[in-house]
Image 1: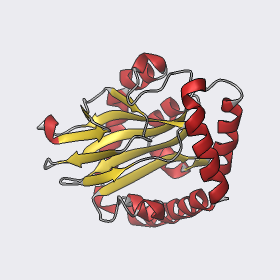
Image 2: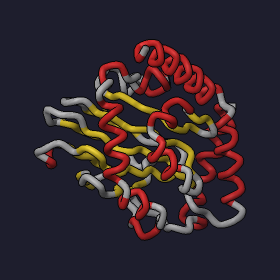
Image 3: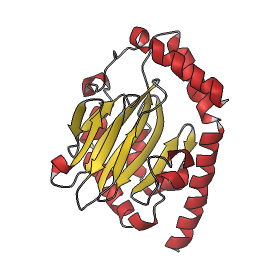
Length: 237
């Protein structure tokens, strides 16, 4: 299945410039995604729920603990996660802990992945790229420590900085890397959204995303998330 998925992803990548309803770009304008206004308008509500989660930051799973395939770019304990959704899997207990965030997420069309992405002080995510151009990456900045310039992302040859309460939307198939050179946590609401495409590529993308949902990669992540939730429940007792 992995080989077929890679072939399909490459085919989509070659056809995106012709079929993309949002064009082909490194960064995208928020106006192209109307639902982003609702997230920005409610970012402080989301931040309040995040603050409750951060009380247990040391106990949150590392990214590679949930998704072992991320170990190349996440091989320490400096990238913590708090998952809500992952290709059809709903982390119900986490959603219950953040009900207002979950309500807002339920209104987003094409949502595939959603989690709090929590970078500890000093974390550097090395250069990498996503393999599926049928997805768009979205960040809602929730906690950005000062100095802001020390907390940044590079995509291709462009540098961007997060601003609390604001959206950052980009194509993660461009090579990128991230730095948190501050002494505090940087947190974003991290989403992957199905890229708006014209037919028939929209159908191909739907099939590929469905295949990803049943792939061993996602099933392993689902099992790891469920195991962590059980451990976390015991910790809270």
